[in-house]
Length: 501
Image (cartoon, rainbow, N blue to C red):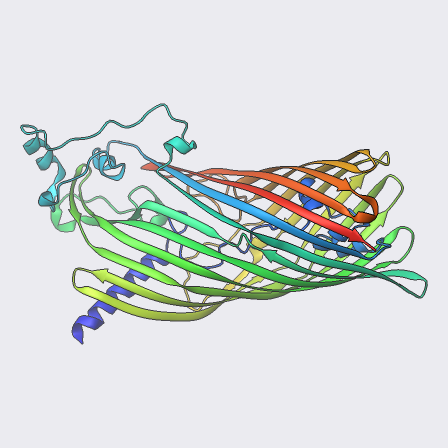
């Protein structure tokens, strides 16, 4: 009984350590919900700059007012395949404090377990005679964000039907009223994070409880080294209903309501490599240790959100405004936590409900069409995540808040022939987190995406659209002791078909 209580206390302490991490490895929460999904193939080819676009069922995913000028019954079907790859290169730098410690973290030196608890410099001098303290040469000349320099790589993929939509125009009091229905499937609801040198407390960063140096062994500081991995995979389904009205030749209005739900398989491992015993500025001891914590279970996400749209349509340009009303996302999670150490195995089941309340946000768009076969479109999309409110079942207060997203999108569509459309697009999507050590504290690193699209119009046989996207996110976490170079690459291929009755 006493042994079980003691192990439970250890488990709770370790869970507190996990919760305190962010860029070095943050606990399972709402990862993935802020990813921008595209349910229109035509829009994706134009960088999703579609807030002011109208006359097509594609507008349903961006601004319900864009449906107001639809004159025919339209049905659309979309399919997508997405691949996302993560890499990270952690570079530790020797400095005047604990000069040889980076050899361990870079795995240039693999200590012998027989030397557990011994001073590093004593092992070094003792091994000079038999070359037992062998430090490998680091690889140099590599671009820090390159795949060849990465310490690890991870890739996740998803594919399937992404969208099924219907637009139905009717006449009400001499006004064109369009009803819209759609089923959207976010098949890329996945996330990954890994940190092979998670240190607690972190000796090179003040926000992670950087230890105070001491001069004697009796007051030494323990720095624990863990290998952290977190992974989430799943999908999110959305059912959307909308109504739009062609109020005047210029003014178009729309309203949409969406209900979404999704379930993900979540996994998290927290494996202890060992610990450093820091004594003074350049003395330390290393010891291997055993403590593995594995968390596995599911998260279920649910929410309802509404949008109010408006468009002003003129001969050579159109203006669009999309207002997103406040919404709340609920996450119900059910996890099994398994702790393994030298004393045995302890299992614990945990359940809870978390809530994320996102405030009002909006998007503005304008498109220019000086000639009939050319359109240039651009959007500004503001998402106020910095004002979001959180409620966690574990009452944790160490999680970092998100920052706003100021998304910029540009798109071009050119139709050299009646049956052929070419599209180009670009968008910049700032992330909702701030890297450790970043100078700018109110804007996350940007994911820059480039898109290509094509449309084939077969008249009464419908329209076939294709789009390709390449997205790149690069950022670095900067510490006194090291720099972590992180990269995320996204590629997406989408096909869609629209038929008009």
